[in-house]
Length: 257
Image (tube, rainbow, N blue to C red; front, side):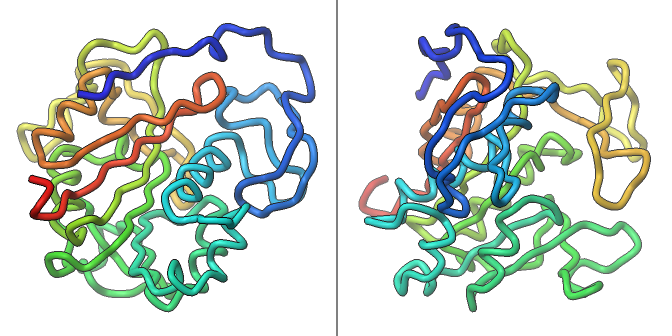
């Protein structure tokens, strides 16, 4: 089991404006990262590419995993070995699509209820994370950024990600967490029937296509790594600055089982 812990960085004072200075792990440009009124993980944006803290931390985990001497995701996509990977990223927003989209093995998707899974709209494939149309062992890497809290049955979707990953493949993802973290993940909606039944006041996050926002189905808790382990993943929790957490889940190869 990998425990989520709050390190010393979570309690140190946060400046009102500039939080840090350095190299952006997404675009590679050096500069300062300014804090705004948004939640901390959604702010501290790079002045060059606009990537917020959570995206920059997610890129740091990707660099630790695949980067070698590369100092940014922009540099990594030019690397021959990384460029040979088959990468899947659900979602329409965020800074990764414009970089990873240049890879020959990159697949991007979004879920439109009115479009059959596997069909394409505006150059983007329609996929339901709970019933992916991809064959087993299709991808080396899956990247999701604040997606799984909006999935009606997230544990089913995590199993689907496990299925489409090749042995040794990785799921690098973020989900928002409430602080203090609950000991168990909380289902905000009863999905046992065909219709959603709200168990708690509904919460919506911004959506790229729906002006009403995307409904939050799950508040994830400390049990997330254990739940992923039950599926078969080996997971590590990477704690960045304050509430920026990225999770790396790996599908083991056979000789590691």
